[in-house]
Amino acid sequence: MNKRKLGNIGTKVSAIGIGAMSFTDFYGPTDEEKSHAILTAALDLGIDHIDTSNVYGMGKSENRIASFLAKQGKTRHDLFKIATKAGICRGDDGKNYFDNSKDHLTSELDKSLKRLGVDQVELFYVHRRDPDFTIEEVTETLAGFVRAGKIRQFGFSEIAPTSLARAAAVHAVGAVQSEYSLSTRSPELGLVQRCKGLGTSLVAFSPVGRGLLSDTPMNRAKAEGLAFLKNNPRFMEPNLSLNIKATQGFRNLAAEMGVKAASLATSWLLHQGDHIIPIPGTRSTEHLKELAKGATLKLSASDIKAIEKTLPLGWAHGDRYSAQQWTGPEKYC
Image 1 (tube, rainbow, N blue to C red):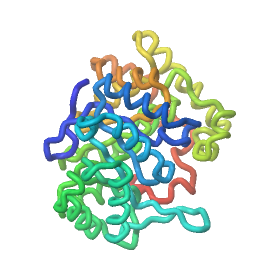
Image 2 (cartoon, rainbow, N blue to C red):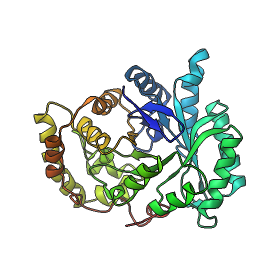
Image 3 (tube, helix red, strand yellow):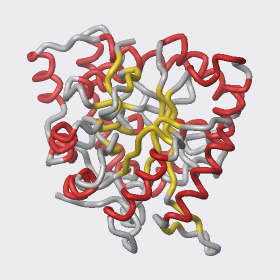
Image 4 (tube, rainbow, N blue to C red):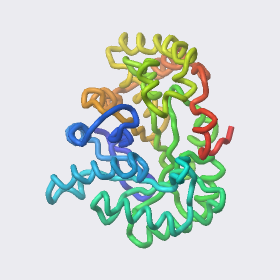
């Protein structure tokens, strides 16, 4: 698979990575065997970037990556460039809150390293910003982890372009993670450009619109069984039916081009800039192949025009998050 630069220290990773939230039951039931099958298929496809978090299954995702690596012998440390995150906490009342303190981030990073069975990760993100700490303070904490050799670089998830600029004035920021796809194009209102200007990678999660841009979009019955999607505006009626109808033309276009819709979706995203790295998640090895195929497609200017005519800016029905889900991400437009 083609490689892209991750951050500004020279690290090269596969143009498409894996979002390892899918190694938990977030999008449906899975297990260790299925997660290991995805990682095996990833290596066969040349995918070497894995994105996880301490809160994905409350450590389950990291543990499943670790158990796979433990079987690989002496090569285990060279197979994947791993990214993990911290900063989201769960209170006794079951509600999330955020902690960007040095003590918390240090403790959670150490726990992640132990779970993963490694001494260092490539990338460590602050998963959500804590308003009690300035981004300059948090950046100093993260820079300390680099100096200590625990991480090679760091990033932030779902921050505004202005926050990125403030952080980068303290220390180079390796990556910003944000939802970005043909379904969610708000990063084009400043974040794509600011990342490029600062040499920061834009790591795009949900690049297939949580399945809306695939050949088999989620139905309401399945969404009802998933805690996140059951209350997500785009997957509630009447929005879901309207979104499936709106994306049918995209599926038809992909078929006309002789590719799967998911392949076309990831390819479009890769064509938006060399600093963009999609990290789709999946529980299916066949779907992983479709997603990875996007890195091999060469889209012409007319192809891009046809895609964006089929799914023009603003086509999606419903917000990408509910009011509760919007707690944490920084809005900037």
